[in-house]
Structure formats: structure tokens, C-alpha cells
Amino acid sequence: MQDRKTWLKTMIVDFLETDANRMGEKFGAEKMWDTPVVGFASGADDIFNQYKSTEICGIEHWTPAEAFAKAYPDSNASTDELTVVSWILPQTEKTKASLRAETWPSERWSRSRIFGECINEALREYMVSTLRNAGYDVIAPVLLPEWTRLENPRQVITSKWSERHIAHAAGLGTFGFCDGLITPVGKAHRLGSIVIRLKVEPDKRPYKDIHAYCLFYTKGTCLACIKRCTPGALTKEGHNKLKCRAFLRGPSTEYNKEKFGLDGYGCGMCQTGVPCESGIPKQ
Image 1 (tube, rainbow, N blue to C red):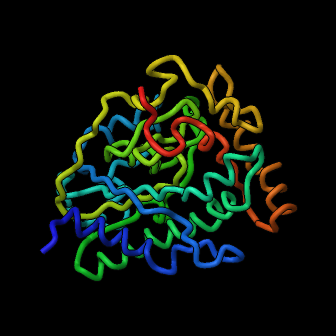
Image 2 (tube, rainbow, N blue to C red):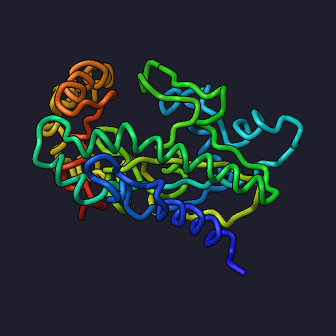
């Protein structure tokens, strides 16, 4: 009998080995996402309450218990009965290399943003349906009808369930200067998660600071992501999220439509061609 961690990890890995995880079109059967990395956090972890600070995500950001109660209002589940399962879907080397050489979105990268998130959503749905069929109460918070994006004065753009912050809580990474999550497999990825009513030993966070892996915050060096930012949304003053969003919704979307016939945006410049692209940079 597999232990609970191995069981849940295997479900995620096996899904990404199916035909659901394919680039499609002219890239054929090539995988969209590389081998996933999975982490676990307890629903009782106080970090989720800390996220409600306006300096982080804001008061409207859900704790695991709050998210769980949206689907199971009468469950009376205690926080320590809940486990957050968070995963990283790393970009493949071919996709990273295609963007590394560009100053505008590559077709591979844009496809991974537009269609790759559909795969991530399908993975969430698969985990929820499979685990419910096995008799477990489980949700994917971003699939709940109440989930929405938010804006607050500090973070500008966040949501009721931030996959980056959830992954950080599960020991999977820390934030970089551009606000991307630097993980053991780098910063070029997508993230997803579920909350299940099942006790699983949480992973220890191998860091104490939210920026522990970023060379700028730890050494005052690097800032390679600034040079990579096509719209100039990254400067020494920080990350202008509104400028970033305007580029994604405007020029990036128009470029993808005209160049590749794709309906949607893609960028990721700050996630490639930088020391944290494919791993944690050496301090």
C-alpha cells in the first residue's frame, strides 16, 4: 500500500503522462509540461492566516478551511484535517529555449500559456473527480464559482486563492524580484492545487524568508529580469503590475494573433534567460 503522499503524487504524475499533456498542432505528441513537482501543507498552518494581511494577499484571500467550506458548508472539518496539495508544472527545455532567444513571445511559450493552463485546469478537475469517487471530500479552490481575482493597494493584482502563495506555503519556492515563484525547477512553470479532507504529513519549508531564493533580495545582485522585460514593467523601483497587465492584454495578445493565430496572451520573458530560469540560483 502506497503512503498518502506517494499516492497523491503518483496521481498527478500519471495524469501528465497521458495524451492530455500534449503541445498539439504542429508540435504533435510532444509534452506540454515536464515532470511535475508536488508539495503538501497542513490546513492548520498559520501562514494561511498571514496571507490575509494587506501586505501579502489581503483579507479576502481564503484559508484552506474557508475555501473548503464553500463546497462543504456543513462538513465541520477542522483545519488540521485538511491538506493542501500543490504542484508545479515545469516548462520543457525546448519551450524555455524558444523564449530565451526572443524579445517577444515565442509560439511554444504562448501555446503553453493559452492551452497549457487548460491542461492544468483539467488536472484540477481530474484530481477532484477521482478523489471524490474514492470517497474523499476535496476541492480545487480556483474552480469554485466564488473564486475571483482581486486588487489591493499593495499587491495591485491578486486573487482569493493565489497559487503562487499556496505553493510557497507547501515548501515549493520563494518569490523573485519580478514576483514569479523561484522553485527547485526554476521560475518557468504553471501552478495548481487542491484541498482535501485527509491528513497528510506536511512538507517543511526549507526557507524562512519569502524572497530567500532571489539573488537581488539576498545579495543585492542580479536583476537580470529587468533586462528581459519587453514592456519595461520591471525597473529598479520594482514591478509595475498594471504596466505588465496592459502589455499582456494589448500588444502581447495582438502579437500572438497576428504572428501565430493564437487567441490569448503570452510573455514570460522574466522567467527565461535569467539565473533562476531552471532552478534555485547559487547564493
